[in-house]
Image (tube, rainbow, N blue to C red; front, side):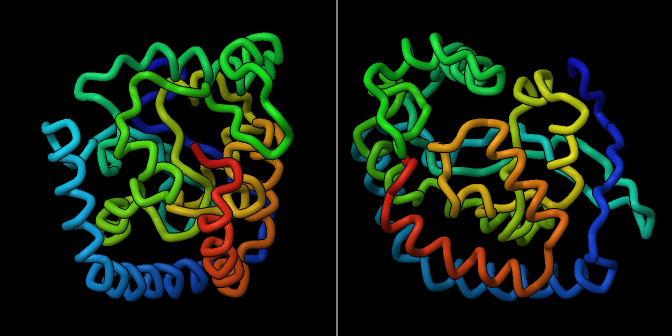
Length: 242
């Protein structure tokens, strides 16, 4: 698996969050995920029908991502792969080469390549390639409204991730990480996070890392609730979304 073996260890940043925090956080995640799943059942049905009507094929997209998992009571975190669920927003069998090219330019801050992938990008807009031919008509709407992330509530129930935390990266993203970048995995990954509510895909990679590390250093239940409350206007504003 490249430079990230099946199990990899990262040392946690200095933080005020202890074992009690993670226990209460997990309890809160479970309770909110169950409520959200029940409340959004009609949305799941509508989205599933829209995807099948638009392109046919599977409704749910499964993808291997990388997560951080706490190792007992130690200050060490295990970095390992897991299966993430999303509503499918691309054509079946979409080639990953375009995203690999984009993420390489994004992490390396290759301005020329990013500009070529998204000409005339303005401040506040996403760095992602514009008019990605792999994305379906329904998929564009789901991404704009962040509805494609809803199936990750099942990941929360399974314990793969939490509601709040740094977004889980793909394997080939972590192959480009510096030791400092890996520190963003020293906490459970989340559906939403501090970096997402402060700009989503419109911030540069090192800005994203800075915000993820800021979250880890100061994480608390109060901070988590703040991020959850800020997620609603961030999604509705659609800033930095594609």
